[in-house]
Amino acid sequence: MPTTFPAYWTVRLNARAAQIPLIEEAVIDEAQAITTLESPDEGMSVLELLYDYPPDEAALKTRLGAVLGDEAVPALEIKSLGSLDWIKEVAQEFPPLPIGRWTIHGAAFRDKVGTHTLPLQIDSTSAFGTGEHPTTRGCLLMLDALLDRFPRLRSPKARMLDVGCGSGILAMAYSMATGAQALGIDMEEESIAIARENIAVNKLESLVSVETGMGYAPASVAARAPYDLIMANIFADPLCELAKDMKLHLAEDGVAILSGILNHQAGSVIQAHKHQGIKLLKRMRLGAWSVLALRKA
Image (cartoon, rainbow, N blue to C red; front, side):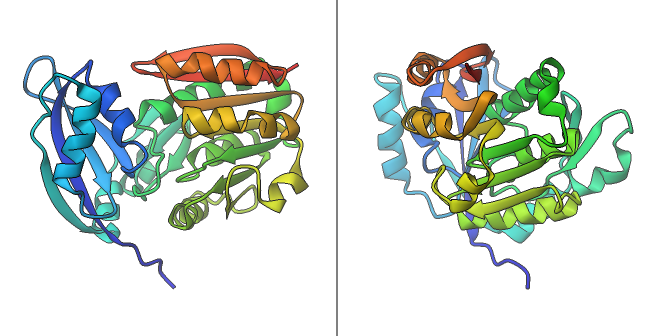
């Protein structure tokens, strides 16, 4: 039976480069996705926010005003998109996006991706993770680098956990590159439904499984532990709160990739994990965002 999805709305606004991380931080807990587009106006970008409910313009302006301070809140353009079926149709035209050893693409480009790369098809856009956002792209770039550095991660016997898996893109990318098992956990049932569709489209059912749950709480997470690799592209505060749980589930000398962290938040995330004996390996900055690679000593 096909999955039934709710209607969606977009909010578009113009912003300067310095405003973008402030706006993203203000709305990332409510918006389903955030896309940055080029603007014809010099020095400006267009932000497009995706919501699964009609956004309250006054409440959103108040929220933006709180982070922008004395700067004027940009004008908001709110539009209804209808159901995900329409959005998915557009997403299928998503052009190939090379990231590391993978190429993320929509269905229309399935036969147009070269054999020199690992093709990963992502069609559903309501679950976070198409590779366009710096946090997802950074995770893939960091994973690409660590696969070269640590042979253990390339072993088909390795185990990977993706906390807050969204579309399933990170778990699928890992298993596609290594042939190893990956488990994805997400608190949103809708995201899990979309991730399962993506897993089936990419024929990864034998390697990747996803379940609804919070953090490390599901019994299946403990049953498969310890993990050679844990990836979590969520938010800085929950990453800090989950540092102890990550230590308990990460194998000795295991590696973690953490994202969803604004540059000014990276220090607190690094420190929270250092207290657990998990030390920084590498930090990557992509605009306003940081991606961290850590290792359990």
